Length: 276
Ligand code: SAM
Image (cartoon, rainbow, N blue to C red; front, top):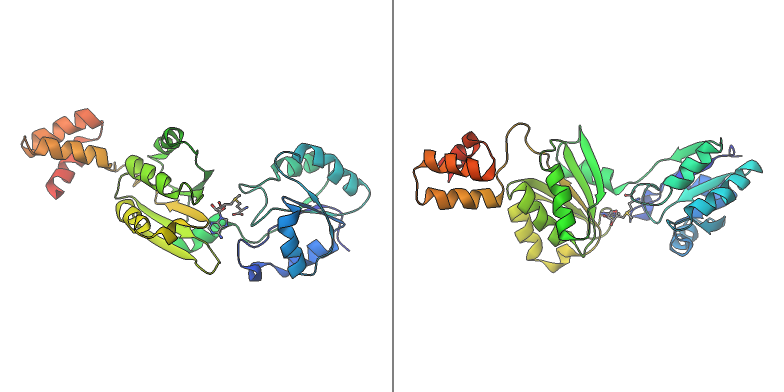
């Protein structure tokens, strides 16, 4: 018998073998499953022989569903919350329900499992001691670039979710803001047949993805190396300015003028000029 509670249950992000035994047991034993999309979850339920009644909980009805779930809990029943894939509440519905259930005085029990961001971080080979999860970036390039500019000096590893429609545009915006040397991992179709994890400086990474349309399909996690602390990074525009000045002026003068134009440190530009 399960203790009456709301169970927040993680489900696989592609590979059904990643379903945990505890998740199966809980979903079989609860009286009600609140699912992001009941039709989507039907496949998972059928695969694991789970016949529990489902109701939908999505971003448009989360507030109304609190009452249904709290009512169940008051009657001594248990409820599970699942999303279409991975951990509920992580770029998925559930926050409103979990908050509401807690405020109503009921227990919320996590049943952990997959989350695409952790899966990507575990294999990308970029620093994982400190990271920032930013979810999805804005759809429009101008808003997206502003978000990226706000993160340009962030030294912790950055993690984003991205859709196949915007993956190239977002990577190009990142190149413009972070510079082509910033190392990025693109983790595509994790745990699925065409899983690909490719790690390279942005300039080369974009060339690689652009040259193969298959690499632009599926689901993506983008993991970005943090800015190297204290050391300013040169973006493509600043390098272009430096190159123009170098074609007319001695190194020291070109670096000094480029520093005034770009706002970067002269020392950084001088070193870059020596490396050109
Ligand atoms: N709740 C999920 C989790 O725990 O990761 C995330 C749900 S969010 C609506 C869906 C996004 O997560 C996708 O657009 C993609 O960016 C990322 N994602 C989910 N599954 C993935 C996979 N198998 N490979 C790469 N990215 C994935």
